[in-house]
Amino acid sequence: MNAYLGNGNGTFTLAGSTPLSYVGFVAVADFNRDGKLDFATSGNQMALGNGDGTFQMPVALVPNRPVTGFNNIATGDINGDGWPDLVLTSGEEEYATIWVLLNNQHGGFTVNTILTCQKSFSTPCDPSEVILADLNGDGNLDLVVGQTGIGGMVVYLGDGKGGFTQGQVFSDTLDAPGTIMVADVNGDGIPDLGLMEAGTLGIYLGKGNGTFYAPFYIGAGPLPGDILTANLHGQSPTAGLPDLVAPDNTGGVMVLINTTK
Image (cartoon, rainbow, N blue to C red):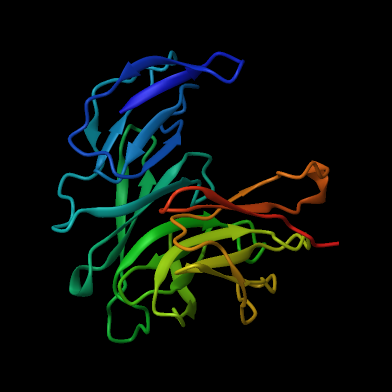
């Protein structure tokens, strides 16, 4: 993996390359709290930073990764101890699992797993993209997990100790699963959800308690590959009304300007 340092004028200089067996998705945080950014990947590797854009040799996140590998990765302080933790997703069908890696503050992680295909669960069994956010305002990070194959997304509410309880399940009504998003799109201070389905983005406005209203839909281009948020039309940062950007797999970018008053 390559790291590029900004020159302050819109250009970048290659600082160093870190050899990895497989990259996948990347999460960046100061995992050992030495003041230097590190990175972890869905390829089951973590590399500590040297503070100059270079990194030490990667080590395994878990000694025995799942048979099907990891699908995605996210980082945040899940148990409120001030140290960044990790969440990864893996597998399909009986192998489908959410991996919660709590920072042990000694250079490693304590692993807890959530099986998403237990018979008592209504969750689709192919977790992919994962986002950490406080969805109900209790100060604890919750999970939003996208589902490939069957499609949709699932909310898991965090207890602030590293545990999660399955919450609301959202089905893929258009049978074309895509990426997910968490952002306050209407400026009410409550996180909302987005689910991309083919060329249509479903927006689920949050109620503030970890549940969400039925979606409304907006077009997002012929074949959007992702959905990103950014302030693009010069509004005050305090307005808290993000615009949406949808890079398209056929080339080009769709920009959706937030018109909330």
